[in-house]
Length: 335
Image (cartoon, rainbow, N blue to C red; front, side, top):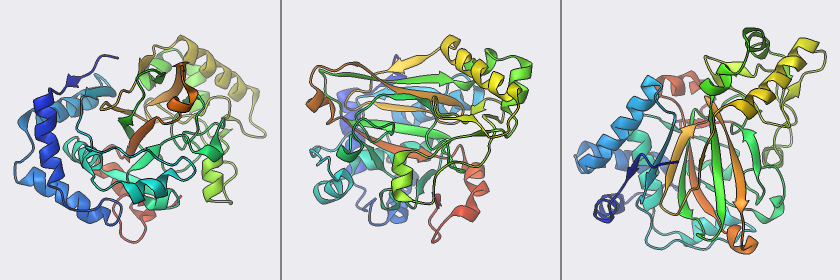
Protein backbone atom coordinates (compact mmCIF):
# COMPACT_ATOMS: atom_id res chain seq x y z
CA UNK A 1 0.00 0.00 0.00
CA UNK A 2 1.40 3.41 -0.97
CA UNK A 3 1.83 5.81 1.96
CA UNK A 4 -0.57 8.73 2.21
CA UNK A 5 2.35 10.87 3.34
CA UNK A 6 6.06 10.30 3.95
CA UNK A 7 7.60 12.60 6.55
CA UNK A 8 11.01 13.96 5.68
CA UNK A 9 13.67 13.42 8.34
CA UNK A 10 13.47 17.13 9.18
CA UNK A 11 9.68 16.96 9.56
CA UNK A 12 9.97 13.84 11.71
CA UNK A 13 12.57 15.41 13.99
CA UNK A 14 10.63 18.66 14.29
CA UNK A 15 7.47 16.81 15.31
CA UNK A 16 9.43 14.56 17.69
CA UNK A 17 10.81 17.62 19.49
CA UNK A 18 7.26 18.91 20.02
CA UNK A 19 6.11 15.54 21.33
CA UNK A 20 9.06 15.27 23.71
CA UNK A 21 7.83 18.44 25.40
CA UNK A 22 4.76 16.56 26.68
CA UNK A 23 5.85 15.93 30.25
CA UNK A 24 2.94 13.76 31.41
CA UNK A 25 2.90 9.97 31.79
CA UNK A 26 0.36 8.10 29.58
CA UNK A 27 0.28 5.00 31.77
CA UNK A 28 0.04 6.72 35.13
CA UNK A 29 -2.60 9.34 34.26
CA UNK A 30 -3.98 9.20 30.75
CA UNK A 31 -6.30 12.16 31.27
CA UNK A 32 -3.41 14.46 32.20
CA UNK A 33 -1.39 13.12 29.29
CA UNK A 34 -4.24 13.69 26.84
CA UNK A 35 -4.76 17.24 28.10
CA UNK A 36 -1.04 17.96 27.76
CA UNK A 37 -1.13 16.86 24.11
CA UNK A 38 -4.23 19.00 23.63
CA UNK A 39 -2.35 21.97 25.07
CA UNK A 40 0.36 21.50 22.41
CA UNK A 41 -2.38 21.75 19.78
CA UNK A 42 -3.99 24.77 21.43
CA UNK A 43 -0.67 26.64 21.56
CA UNK A 44 -0.20 26.15 17.82
CA UNK A 45 2.99 24.13 18.25
CA UNK A 46 2.02 21.31 15.88
CA UNK A 47 3.78 21.72 12.52
CA UNK A 48 1.40 22.76 9.77
CA UNK A 49 2.23 19.80 7.51
CA UNK A 50 0.91 17.37 10.12
CA UNK A 51 -2.35 19.19 10.76
CA UNK A 52 -2.89 19.23 6.98
CA UNK A 53 -2.22 15.48 6.68
CA UNK A 54 -4.65 14.72 9.49
CA UNK A 55 -7.28 16.98 7.92
CA UNK A 56 -6.86 15.08 4.65
CA UNK A 57 -7.38 11.73 6.41
CA UNK A 58 -10.43 13.06 8.22
CA UNK A 59 -11.87 14.27 4.90
CA UNK A 60 -11.19 10.92 3.22
CA UNK A 61 -13.03 9.11 5.98
CA UNK A 62 -15.95 11.53 5.89
CA UNK A 63 -16.36 11.36 2.11
CA UNK A 64 -15.86 7.62 1.88
CA UNK A 65 -12.78 8.02 -0.30
CA UNK A 66 -10.72 5.75 1.96
CA UNK A 67 -10.80 4.15 5.39
CA UNK A 68 -7.16 3.00 5.33
CA UNK A 69 -4.12 5.29 5.43
CA UNK A 70 -0.37 4.96 5.94
CA UNK A 71 2.04 7.58 7.24
CA UNK A 72 5.75 6.76 6.93
CA UNK A 73 8.84 7.88 8.86
CA UNK A 74 6.81 8.91 11.90
CA UNK A 75 8.53 10.06 15.12
CA UNK A 76 9.48 7.36 17.60
CA UNK A 77 11.29 7.29 20.93
CA UNK A 78 15.03 7.53 20.60
CA UNK A 79 15.44 4.32 22.62
CA UNK A 80 13.11 1.41 21.78
CA UNK A 81 13.43 -1.27 24.47
CA UNK A 82 13.56 -4.96 23.66
CA UNK A 83 10.58 -6.45 25.47
CA UNK A 84 10.49 -9.58 27.58
CA UNK A 85 7.84 -11.66 25.81
CA UNK A 86 6.84 -13.49 28.98
CA UNK A 87 5.26 -10.25 30.25
CA UNK A 88 5.86 -7.48 27.69
CA UNK A 89 3.41 -5.03 29.28
CA UNK A 90 5.15 -5.01 32.66
CA UNK A 91 8.51 -4.92 30.90
CA UNK A 92 7.48 -1.93 28.79
CA UNK A 93 6.31 -0.06 31.88
CA UNK A 94 9.64 -0.77 33.58
CA UNK A 95 11.91 0.08 30.64
CA UNK A 96 10.19 2.77 28.59
CA UNK A 97 11.10 6.22 29.94
CA UNK A 98 9.99 8.46 27.06
CA UNK A 99 6.62 8.50 25.32
CA UNK A 100 7.06 9.99 21.86
CA UNK A 101 5.17 7.10 20.23
CA UNK A 102 2.26 7.45 22.63
CA UNK A 103 2.15 11.24 22.21
CA UNK A 104 2.19 10.82 18.42
CA UNK A 105 -0.78 8.43 18.52
CA UNK A 106 -2.68 10.72 20.90
CA UNK A 107 -1.97 13.76 18.73
CA UNK A 108 -3.13 11.91 15.63
CA UNK A 109 -6.36 10.86 17.39
CA UNK A 110 -7.07 14.42 18.49
CA UNK A 111 -6.40 15.94 15.07
CA UNK A 112 -8.57 13.43 13.21
CA UNK A 113 -11.17 13.87 16.00
CA UNK A 114 -11.47 10.21 16.99
CA UNK A 115 -11.50 9.87 20.81
CA UNK A 116 -9.46 6.96 22.13
CA UNK A 117 -10.94 4.17 24.21
CA UNK A 118 -9.47 1.44 26.38
CA UNK A 119 -10.79 -1.73 28.01
CA UNK A 120 -10.70 -1.87 31.80
CA UNK A 121 -9.84 -5.58 31.93
CA UNK A 122 -7.03 -5.39 29.38
CA UNK A 123 -3.47 -4.20 29.99
CA UNK A 124 -4.41 -2.33 33.18
CA UNK A 125 -6.86 -0.20 31.21
CA UNK A 126 -4.03 1.37 29.17
CA UNK A 127 -5.01 3.45 26.15
CA UNK A 128 -1.79 2.45 24.35
CA UNK A 129 -1.41 -1.30 23.97
CA UNK A 130 1.16 -3.58 22.41
CA UNK A 131 0.77 -5.99 19.53
CA UNK A 132 3.54 -8.43 20.43
CA UNK A 133 4.03 -12.20 20.47
CA UNK A 134 3.37 -13.06 24.12
CA UNK A 135 5.00 -16.42 24.78
CA UNK A 136 2.02 -18.15 26.39
CA UNK A 137 -0.15 -17.41 23.34
CA UNK A 138 2.27 -18.77 20.76
CA UNK A 139 0.41 -20.36 17.84
CA UNK A 140 -3.02 -19.24 19.06
CA UNK A 141 -5.60 -17.17 17.17
CA UNK A 142 -5.09 -13.88 18.98
CA UNK A 143 -3.39 -10.62 18.11
CA UNK A 144 -0.94 -11.28 20.95
CA UNK A 145 0.61 -14.34 19.34
CA UNK A 146 3.18 -15.14 16.66
CA UNK A 147 0.54 -16.65 14.38
CA UNK A 148 -1.23 -15.39 11.31
CA UNK A 149 -4.69 -13.92 11.87
CA UNK A 150 -7.77 -14.61 9.76
CA UNK A 151 -9.89 -11.72 8.52
CA UNK A 152 -11.75 -10.19 11.43
CA UNK A 153 -12.53 -7.02 13.29
CA UNK A 154 -10.99 -6.57 16.72
CA UNK A 155 -13.05 -7.75 19.69
CA UNK A 156 -15.76 -9.22 17.48
CA UNK A 157 -17.54 -10.91 20.38
CA UNK A 158 -17.60 -7.80 22.57
CA UNK A 159 -20.53 -5.38 22.69
CA UNK A 160 -18.26 -2.31 22.33
CA UNK A 161 -15.85 -2.33 19.41
CA UNK A 162 -13.54 0.39 18.16
CA UNK A 163 -14.43 2.22 14.95
CA UNK A 164 -10.78 2.77 14.03
CA UNK A 165 -7.48 1.09 14.85
CA UNK A 166 -4.06 2.70 14.55
CA UNK A 167 -0.84 0.67 14.53
CA UNK A 168 2.56 2.34 14.94
CA UNK A 169 5.60 0.27 14.02
CA UNK A 170 8.00 0.40 16.98
CA UNK A 171 10.18 -2.56 15.97
CA UNK A 172 9.52 -4.26 12.63
CA UNK A 173 12.47 -6.42 11.52
CA UNK A 174 13.52 -5.67 7.96
CA UNK A 175 14.32 -9.26 7.02
CA UNK A 176 10.85 -10.64 7.77
CA UNK A 177 7.74 -9.85 5.79
CA UNK A 178 4.51 -9.61 7.79
CA UNK A 179 1.57 -7.87 6.13
CA UNK A 180 -1.65 -6.44 7.52
CA UNK A 181 -4.52 -7.07 5.13
CA UNK A 182 -7.59 -4.84 4.91
CA UNK A 183 -10.89 -5.28 3.07
CA UNK A 184 -13.26 -2.32 2.97
CA UNK A 185 -16.80 -3.15 4.06
CA UNK A 186 -18.19 -1.41 0.97
CA UNK A 187 -16.33 -3.86 -1.24
CA UNK A 188 -17.71 -6.79 0.74
CA UNK A 189 -21.22 -5.36 0.54
CA UNK A 190 -21.00 -5.07 -3.24
CA UNK A 191 -20.40 -8.83 -3.50
CA UNK A 192 -23.56 -9.77 -1.58
CA UNK A 193 -27.10 -10.15 -2.91
CA UNK A 194 -29.98 -8.20 -1.39
CA UNK A 195 -31.31 -11.40 0.19
CA UNK A 196 -27.97 -12.26 1.77
CA UNK A 197 -27.65 -8.73 3.12
CA UNK A 198 -31.08 -9.01 4.76
CA UNK A 199 -30.14 -12.30 6.41
CA UNK A 200 -26.80 -10.96 7.63
CA UNK A 201 -28.62 -8.03 9.26
CA UNK A 202 -30.66 -10.42 11.42
CA UNK A 203 -29.47 -11.32 14.94
CA UNK A 204 -28.84 -15.00 14.22
CA UNK A 205 -25.05 -15.39 14.58
CA UNK A 206 -22.63 -15.93 17.46
CA UNK A 207 -18.89 -15.46 17.95
CA UNK A 208 -16.76 -17.08 20.67
CA UNK A 209 -14.52 -14.82 22.73
CA UNK A 210 -10.83 -15.05 21.95
CA UNK A 211 -8.42 -16.77 24.31
CA UNK A 212 -6.90 -13.51 25.53
CA UNK A 213 -10.33 -12.12 26.49
CA UNK A 214 -11.25 -15.34 28.27
CA UNK A 215 -8.02 -15.27 30.26
CA UNK A 216 -8.82 -11.74 31.44
CA UNK A 217 -12.47 -12.49 32.25
CA UNK A 218 -13.47 -16.10 32.96
CA UNK A 219 -17.16 -15.25 32.50
CA UNK A 220 -16.65 -14.63 28.79
CA UNK A 221 -17.41 -17.61 26.57
CA UNK A 222 -19.62 -16.78 23.58
CA UNK A 223 -21.12 -13.48 22.42
CA UNK A 224 -24.79 -12.66 22.51
CA UNK A 225 -26.67 -13.52 19.35
CA UNK A 226 -25.78 -10.73 16.90
CA UNK A 227 -26.11 -9.66 13.27
CA UNK A 228 -23.03 -9.73 11.07
CA UNK A 229 -23.96 -6.71 8.93
CA UNK A 230 -24.75 -3.46 10.73
CA UNK A 231 -25.08 0.22 9.78
CA UNK A 232 -24.41 0.59 6.07
CA UNK A 233 -21.31 -1.58 5.70
CA UNK A 234 -20.10 -2.57 9.19
CA UNK A 235 -19.23 -6.27 9.50
CA UNK A 236 -19.09 -8.00 12.88
CA UNK A 237 -17.23 -11.13 11.86
CA UNK A 238 -14.31 -13.37 12.82
CA UNK A 239 -13.53 -15.79 10.01
CA UNK A 240 -13.61 -19.50 10.93
CA UNK A 241 -15.20 -18.60 14.30
CA UNK A 242 -18.39 -16.58 13.75
CA UNK A 243 -21.17 -19.04 13.00
CA UNK A 244 -24.95 -19.35 13.03
CA UNK A 245 -26.68 -19.42 16.40
CA UNK A 246 -28.52 -22.57 17.51
CA UNK A 247 -31.90 -22.67 15.81
CA UNK A 248 -30.96 -20.25 13.03
CA UNK A 249 -32.66 -21.00 9.68
CA UNK A 250 -30.91 -22.49 6.68
CA UNK A 251 -31.09 -19.07 5.02
CA UNK A 252 -28.73 -17.73 7.70
CA UNK A 253 -26.23 -20.48 6.94
CA UNK A 254 -26.52 -19.73 3.22
CA UNK A 255 -25.85 -16.04 3.89
CA UNK A 256 -22.79 -16.92 5.97
CA UNK A 257 -21.42 -18.99 3.10
CA UNK A 258 -22.16 -16.11 0.73
CA UNK A 259 -20.10 -13.81 2.96
CA UNK A 260 -17.18 -16.23 2.88
CA UNK A 261 -17.36 -16.23 -0.92
CA UNK A 262 -17.60 -12.42 -0.94
CA UNK A 263 -14.40 -12.21 1.11
CA UNK A 264 -12.54 -14.15 -1.58
CA UNK A 265 -13.84 -11.93 -4.39
CA UNK A 266 -13.65 -8.52 -2.69
CA UNK A 267 -10.73 -6.15 -3.30
CA UNK A 268 -8.03 -6.27 -0.65
CA UNK A 269 -5.26 -3.95 0.45
CA UNK A 270 -2.12 -5.27 2.13
CA UNK A 271 0.52 -3.23 3.90
CA UNK A 272 3.79 -4.27 5.43
CA UNK A 273 4.21 -2.07 8.49
CA UNK A 274 7.80 -0.92 8.80
CA UNK A 275 9.46 0.66 11.82
CA UNK A 276 8.11 4.23 11.93
CA UNK A 277 4.97 3.46 9.88
CA UNK A 278 1.51 4.39 11.09
CA UNK A 279 -1.20 2.21 9.56
CA UNK A 280 -4.69 3.41 10.50
CA UNK A 281 -7.89 1.76 9.26
CA UNK A 282 -11.55 1.10 9.98
CA UNK A 283 -12.19 -1.72 12.43
CA UNK A 284 -15.96 -2.16 12.01
CA UNK A 285 -16.39 -0.83 8.47
CA UNK A 286 -13.98 -3.44 7.17
CA UNK A 287 -12.05 -6.58 8.08
CA UNK A 288 -8.32 -7.00 8.60
CA UNK A 289 -5.82 -9.85 8.84
CA UNK A 290 -2.19 -10.67 9.58
CA UNK A 291 -0.29 -12.56 6.89
CA UNK A 292 3.22 -13.92 7.39
CA UNK A 293 4.42 -13.78 3.81
CA UNK A 294 8.11 -14.58 4.38
CA UNK A 295 9.74 -15.26 7.73
CA UNK A 296 13.50 -15.73 7.46
CA UNK A 297 14.29 -15.64 11.19
CA UNK A 298 11.36 -16.77 13.38
CA UNK A 299 13.03 -15.65 16.61
CA UNK A 300 13.65 -12.20 15.16
CA UNK A 301 10.15 -11.97 13.73
CA UNK A 302 8.68 -12.65 17.17
CA UNK A 303 10.25 -9.37 18.33
CA UNK A 304 7.90 -7.38 16.07
CA UNK A 305 6.22 -4.69 18.18
CA UNK A 306 3.37 -2.42 17.16
CA UNK A 307 1.97 0.25 19.48
CA UNK A 308 -1.80 0.24 19.09
CA UNK A 309 -4.79 2.47 19.84
CA UNK A 310 -8.53 1.94 19.59
CA UNK A 311 -10.70 4.93 18.69
CA UNK A 312 -14.35 5.89 18.38
CA UNK A 313 -15.55 7.36 15.08
CA UNK A 314 -16.23 10.75 16.71
CA UNK A 315 -17.35 12.34 19.97
CA UNK A 316 -20.97 11.36 19.31
CA UNK A 317 -20.02 7.68 19.00
CA UNK A 318 -18.09 7.92 22.26
CA UNK A 319 -21.09 9.50 23.96
CA UNK A 320 -23.25 6.50 23.00
CA UNK A 321 -21.12 4.37 25.30
CA UNK A 322 -20.94 6.86 28.17
CA UNK A 323 -22.83 4.44 30.42
CA UNK A 324 -19.98 1.96 30.06
CA UNK A 325 -17.29 4.35 31.23
CA UNK A 326 -15.63 3.48 34.51
CA UNK A 327 -14.30 5.79 37.20
CA UNK A 328 -15.09 8.85 35.07
CA UNK A 329 -12.27 8.04 32.66
CA UNK A 330 -13.07 9.21 29.13
CA UNK A 331 -13.55 6.37 26.70
CA UNK A 332 -12.78 3.46 29.04
CA UNK A 333 -15.22 0.57 28.73
CA UNK A 334 -15.85 -2.36 30.99
CA UNK A 335 -14.93 -5.56 29.14
